[in-house]
Length: 583
Image 1 (cartoon, rainbow, N blue to C red):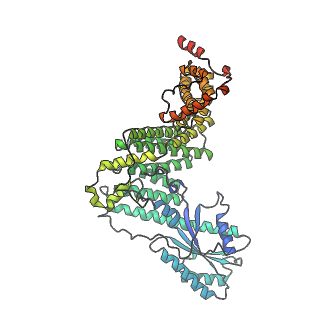
Image 2: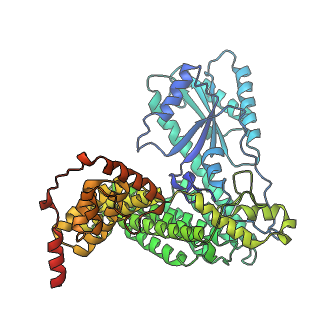
Image 3: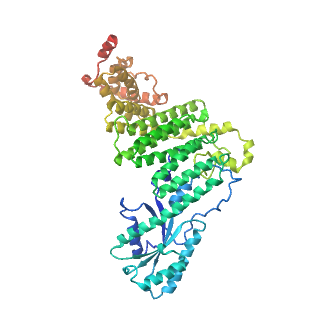
């Protein structure tokens, strides 16, 4: 699995908007065309209709439309959702193609240009063959048109042009290039938006029509797929209430699928995708309690879907991503005006994400100790770099391609390959980033003890990452609070880690301070004699050699080892000792 496997695809996380393709515009060499394009793209305020525009050449090749299926009798789906489907409908298959053509009603070469325009429309239609995409024509004109009905020549020629291009009157527009260009563009946008709405409504009806051909024995995956598609098209249509309804149905159906070892990851992946959509829409509808309830339900349903015990680290990574994604959604909603409270804020979700990442790290370390090593090559590796369906493993795809391998492949080796792939993924950085996000949230919502607790964890992660300077800086910050509040047990635990950092950095002053606070460690006695102290217990063994070399250098500079320490800022070890006796 790639390191970015758990990142949600951008096409899932974006706000779906109707895709409209503009052709016939030369935005590089034609100043008028460039001004038109800029009017469509620049300063798109919130009150403009949600459309994604692209300028494409007139002969652009759109994705080929597959032959429509007339029967599902012998059809067995190979997965739930294809990896390219969302991107295809966001960026590749337009709801509407608009052909821009320069032509005035009184053009002396009207017939020739009418014929040329009709030819261009036919080229566009041919490239869209089989699809329900709408086609419209916009005539770029130099003059401001007269009110409807007053220009008889315009009415007559508009009718002949629509007939030649096989267009309805609602698909032919005029764009005067005047000082009021932006106003005309906004009116065009609204008309384009209506055409796009019609297209997505047609697509929804088309997907719904498949239901009568399906049976719940062999087409379980299709029930989930179709509900997801209807919900996604509803989002593109900006019908978010219906989108939410269909996503909820898809979520229920995905948990009704028969789960086994080979499809567990696919089910969890799709459940995570649909849960993300539901939570995002709940926040968008200003119903945060529904979003929180949905997420809790999602975690309860999925937390035990671990699969093979050898791949428990993978489940921990997936769980971590679920909490992180919800925390990001929650945080985004707050920035848009939602009010959070001290006991329910994004920090808790970032914290839980960090906990699952720590679990994953520990499971990975156990695999390392068990002797797992990364394989050089396996017969099920895919070289194309992409999978057909979300959540499927590369070797499942190869199984479908080369059925003869089934009798020769050892599934135990497959599991070991999956296990080994975790060893090369960065984990410390992710844990620190999640903890940092959580600390920022708890600071914002005035939760000082939670903030201190997580800063200690960050310090420990920096220690494991061998970044002792940052580790000591964080721990020292928290120790000031714990000294003030006289929490001896917590202070002692932190001091132990801080002492290891000081030793591994050969920071003489810090080492003396922490030794004094830790009840007068025996190592402290070595320093006045310019002797190197023994390594602190549980110090990273691989760093000990470098640390001893640093200490030898420090001790060699005997004259510079005179240090002044202001002890009033630190808890005397005698006081700690006395308090321990009293308790």
